[in-house]
Image (cartoon, rainbow, N blue to C red):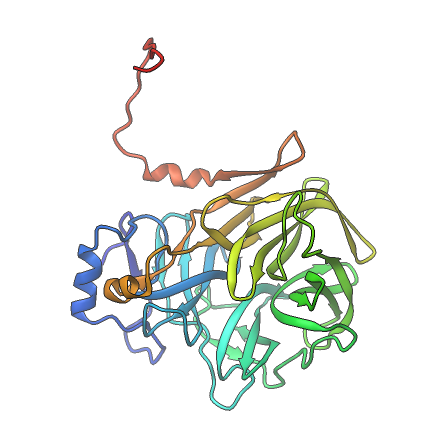
Length: 363
């Protein structure tokens, strides 16, 4: 299949033993004929997709990883799917990046995380699941491979082997990582029993040895205004934007995914002080993640959740859509601005312009 508008093609499949999402001829034809399957939002080849993961630009290419069940259209058996683009519009499917390894810290699932450039070594920091444990793990790739196809899990996983002992943690997952002058920092999403969601801060010199510091911010599950933030924060990420810092979270409550929220404020000495709070998207977007590209833009993707029944998703053979990429900015009124990436203008067709036309009320 050519690299055409709204199309996705496989790269490097010939002679490769890599794991691909299996799509037989019957399912491929069913997907092709489905009038409800989006044509220009990113989708996996088939089956289930949720959170965007590991957003990174490497050697000029944008890499989009995502939570993926490659064997069915319902949530289960999480892997990391992978696609690459040079223009944010046309995406090429790559082999599955990470899959659960039997008898390992991620034997029951490879959950959400991020990707960073560790001095030329592409590094994924992810949530490994074994039983009730959800702990921080690493994987690395060869930096000379512009497609980042082959990932090797760190033999010492998990690199954070336990939750903070001084907190009554309800849930714990979804690391995001960034570098400061004094080393690497990591936020883990969490929920504190009877208190609310939290973003837990760690520090490391090398991405392997981590020291727990403290929560940068803790929610209050009894507070409803200006934004209710649930019992647990999934997918927290802190990043600079203009002269402020922004914290984004996904609001979770007892297996219910509510919405994505944000706070704009200041970050100093391990503490985040919010000044403005809001709901990131009033629709179906959840689990957002951002990256900074080589133009200095802060780009966000999110998972667009399904409203269909499980039976409908089973019949369709797919579930979950990735949002279009947004460019974030600070608005003059102190809120968070979001605009479609200008590259998406390439999707426009058959322009029409109307001048000097007045519309009457009720007309």
